[in-house]
Length: 121
Image (cartoon, rainbow, N blue to C red; front, side, top):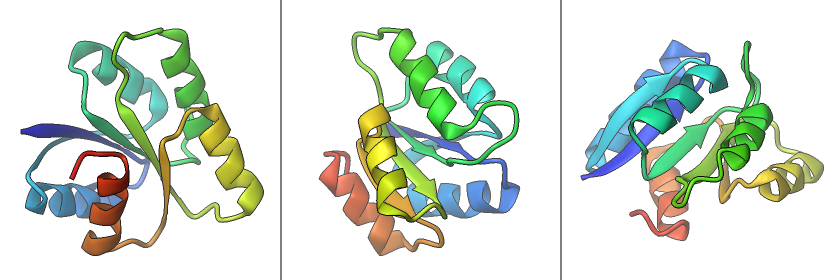
């Protein structure tokens, strides 16, 4: 079973995303910020991280930078999941190491399509 780590400071978003991912046959874990997510990635590497941009403690961009510094042999795919929708922000996320980008709110079909793009659906 593929594993996804849902990283968002909103419990509601984490719950909704987790439910959708479970219907897509993912084992799901959750983190409320990038710092918690980084520790979870190091303990139990997910196949994909669904990552919010704006979070307290450590946001999505800082998480991506920290993930890159770990120099893992196999890093998880990263799908940014955010309300940030400017072309500049999307380019910034991709340049920082995100594999794909999804806008909130999203539905099952949209998330499934993005996971297909990164090779995990």
